[in-house]
Amino acid sequence: MAKHVVVYSSPTCPHCLHTKQFLKENNISFEDIDVTADHQQAEIMIEKSGQMGVPVLDIEGDIIVGFDKEKIKITLGI
Amino acid sequence: MAMYDLIIIGAGPAGITASVYAVRKRLNILVISPDIGGQAALGGDIENYTGYQFITGPELALKFEEHMRKFDIQLKDESVQDLKKTGEIIIVKTNKAEYQARTVIVASGKKTRELNVPGENEFKNRGLTYCATCDAPLFSGKDVAVIGGGNSGLDAAIQLERIAKKVYIINIAHELTGDEIMQETIKKDKNTIVYNESKVLAVLGEKMVNAIKISRQGKEEILPVEGIFVEIGLIPNIDFAGILEKNEFGEIKVNCYNETNIEAIFAAGDVTNVPEKQIIIAAGEGSKAALSAFRYLNQHRFS
Image (cartoon, rainbow over all chains, first blue to last red):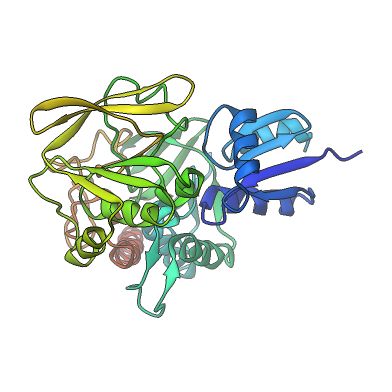
């Protein structure tokens, strides 16, 4: 079964755009959370990743900071 | 090993434009870059790129990328580590492989200059950032400091004054050096405070940043802030380009044909000593470099 993917992002960040584009190209569906619009979610992201940079991916508990293509591929098995 | 007509190092405005020109000349090319869009992708609002009265940096970078991808251009997501020339063959070594070409265009651009103070590495992305466009929204309602009083510093401060509670600008010079029009905006904002003749001595915090230690007109003080935006200029990406001649700022020296000191190696955009670092200039330089490489290949007719 496909893994549940959450992307914490901001609308202005280029690495976020690239991350989402990459997931779409690979037919991975994901939940997109705009941390600039939702302060509580921003705090959750900081808590999970121990840092404040976007994007952050939460793939069923595996936290990936930044657009780390290799790590995303390995974690998703693509 | 495959022999390319041209390898382009970098995929910012200069590298992408060079690739489009080269592929339309039917050259067999390879583009090597760890990112696409370069600094343009990190910029704020752009109102002086001809044809676009208003576009954001990431949007323009995406347009460049679409343009490049319209052609069948080979792109390697790798970092170049070494560049050398043996006879008439140029060898480009990356973190993953080695490639050969008849000509090369270095369009590797610039990267953010770091503060080089204690705490900087430890607190990267833990309150300290080099990309206001990316991260500013995460600091809503917080006190933050922008380091640098030039154009990019003021650009960051203006983005932040709508979001953060208080914005300190830590400026090393006697007064701000960014464009007048931005200085006026800064002066109008009551929550933005400018500290001139000031520099950062250390970044402080526990899990996240909670203060910076600064020297303000010779006196040390601790400024409680939760965010630090470093905007103290840029340095050229030239670690791999030992064989190329540079100026005192580390920029690769080129003539008006984008030729470097080594025949068949060209350079374009912000990594060079071309006066004025602008997206439109980098793009134009990229096209010139591609045409120069094409002319060189035509004159030599390698088989």
